[in-house]
Image (cartoon, rainbow, N blue to C red; front, side, top):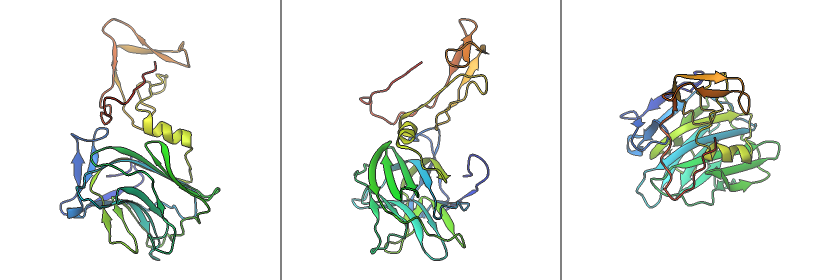
Length: 266
C-alpha cells in the first residue's frame, strides 16, 4: 500500500481489509475496494493547501446501483473543510469545501459506465485559479475563478477510495483503483495529461537503464544477449547480437475494445 518512492505510507482499512485484483486489473495488480466492507486506504499527509496540484489515477466502477456515490479521494482538516473527489451519479465530482450546497462544485460532463477502465486527472492551477477534470486525457469540465483549497494541515487526514463531505454520508469506492499519483506544486499540461492517458509504453533504449519503460505505466522489459550501443538514431540504441537475441515486455493493458486504434512506432 505504500508510495512507490517509499516516502509515504498507506494503511488499508476495512473488514476484511481490501485485496488486490489481478484478472481484470489495468496493469499488473490494482486495489479492489468494496463499500459493504467500508474499505479504503489512508495515506500520509500531502500538503495541497492553497497551491497547484495534479491528481491522476485509473479506476473502474463495479457498482450495480442505478445511483451511486463512489469515493475516490479526500483530504480533510480539523476544520471539516474537505477536498473531495468522487463519482456522483456516474459523473466525476470535485469540491474544495466538502460538497457544501452553497459552494460551487465542479461536475464532470461525461456519464461513466460500469466495468470500464477510465483515466482520471484532476488539476488545480492556482495561478489561473482553475479547476480542471480530464477523462481519458481529454478535458471533461473546467471551472474558473476558483479559490484555492483552504484545508488546514492540523489533524488533516488523506484517503484513497473514500470521500468526505458535509451534505452527503461517507462515500466509499466500489471497484478498482490503479496507478494513483499526487503531484503537489505541479499542474500538468493538457499535452502531458493526454500522453499519460494514452501512451502505453516508451522504451528509449538508452545506456542508463536501457530496458526501463519511461511511460507512467512502468512496464519494464527483459532481454537476452543484447548490448547497448552509442550509435543510435537518437542517443543510444540496443543491438541484437545473434538471431536468438530478444527484448520482451508483458502485461500490456487489454482494457480497450478491439475497435480502438493502436499505434506502434519504432
